[in-house]
Image (cartoon, rainbow, N blue to C red; front, side):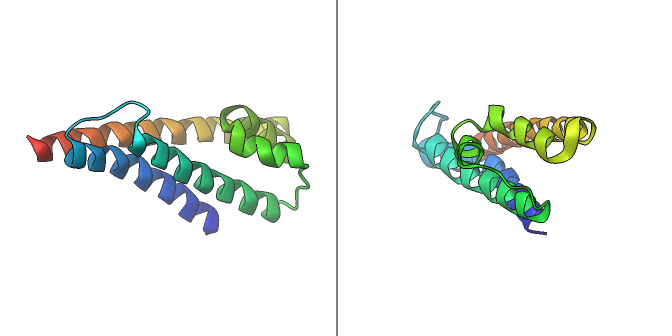
Length: 120
């Protein structure tokens, strides 16, 4: 259940951050303050998901993997998925993760569109 909550938090952040930025500032500023806050909170949610998953799978990860999930998520998370699940299941889960990432991007565009509609 905790992993689902972490993923829902990621989805909500992706939708609401651009929406709020447009409503508050009237535009989207690439790598602006809203983006930075979104990234900070998103990394927290991703690490929470990773921590719970690691605990549920009783997977022992070293400090490099733990820090890597925070610092280089896009590279290290696929490594974790394959190491913790094996090639087949890890690959399948990686494809699911890429689909979720595409959903997150779509939600960000939706938030931007809704914010633009509210402002105009």
